[in-house]
Image (cartoon, rainbow, N blue to C red; front, side):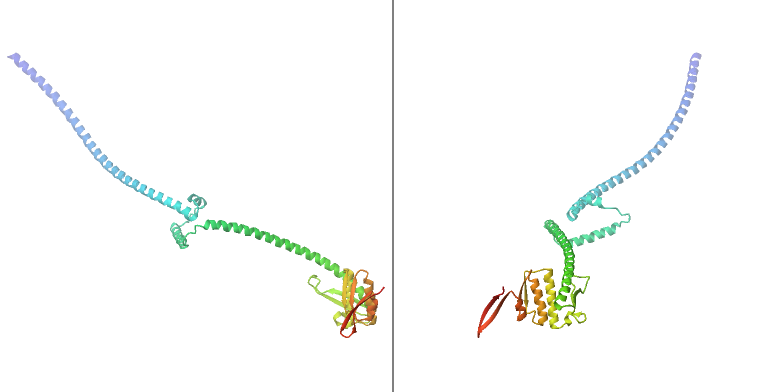
Length: 325
């Protein structure tokens, strides 16, 4: 009996020891449970935070997808507008968009709205031009070819005008030189012949406008023997005739001619002047053949041959020629 009691006591002691151990383990487990519960609460809180962040990210992702979709739409619209702009540049301006952009210098003060208004204004003006002339390029080519031809012709004409003007200047220069030389020679001859025909006195010519020889008039100044110097228009009829003969013979002496026809030039002259006139004609007849129409017997006496008209019968004219040896 005592042995059994000892065994029961030993078992109770073991059980008490086991109960202490269980209590100790239970406390430890309770501590672990409490710790696990704390960690679980923190994990739930973190999970809630992550859930909120995930929701926010999902919202942002949705917005990003919508923005991307809108960007794709805008990109498609921009591509369509770019293609339309390219086609418009070629069709309306005959230039590619790249060529226009390369020639364009950006302006920092450029007003987009004003630019659009200007574009619309220009577009309206273009539309107001009416139908497009499909032959415009061909006509432009023909016009440019015609313009080039006319430009060449104009250049040739201008060169011709310049050459002609240069030739005229040279002609005028030579003409002035020749006129001055001829005038000086004839004036000298006139002075000599005037003295010979008048038996003295003085005769000379003067240019009215020395700056314009080719357009200037000429004054003839005469001073017969015993008279004062005066214009030839103030002389008597006979003196005018003698002065005119002196001028004509002065010209013939400068530039002789094969023939010279004088018609009644001796009519105003008296006998003495006719003698000087015929003597001068006979002197110059070595280079020029003079044909003189005259009624003066004194002049006829100087001739080498006479051709006349006589009327032996009334109303019947007869030509008569006489040659003097």
